[in-house]
Image (cartoon, rainbow, N blue to C red; front, side, top):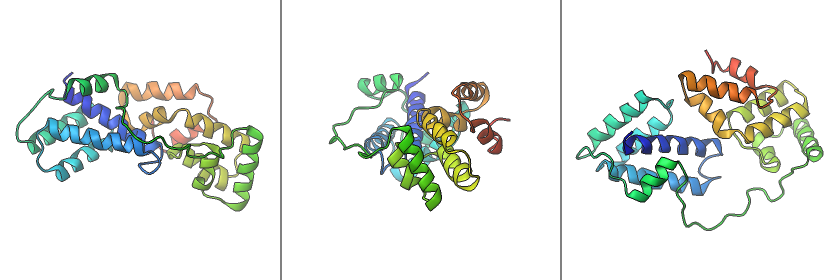
Length: 222
């Protein structure tokens, strides 16, 4: 597998991770890494028109990750570049991409996102019950609970908890498991074929109360 393919795969994983963890504002270190990786891609393909090429790779990052979408992105980037260059990333970049480890950046350490995060179950349940009475948004609640804001937690909190009055303990249980399974839940949406079913089976074993209902209602498994 050539380095261009590995770089695009890593970019896809990284941008999805950024989205699942709340976006650039909540994760400036990851956003910085995404932007740096974009510059590496532009350099690798000898890109002149960065704006158009940025549209290409960001469009790619929102599609399911497959051989077809990777090949399409490679072809479009090659057309944008002055020459077709394969495998020209610096050795240290190659090593990081192959191992799929985040590129370390010299950034100022951030304070915890929620220093008043509630971790014990009793207090968390009380907060959720009060949130339902006041119809609070998930953003007002998740930060205190240490919950990641993503498609599944939005579904559990907004749809099942606030609108359908689901049991608070079951809701808290699923919110916490989802927060520990961010990348797997994201991969379920963006992968296809046998790998998708493998991820689905792994997630079913985690003890979710509402996961299979979520999958059925969103037609995630054919």
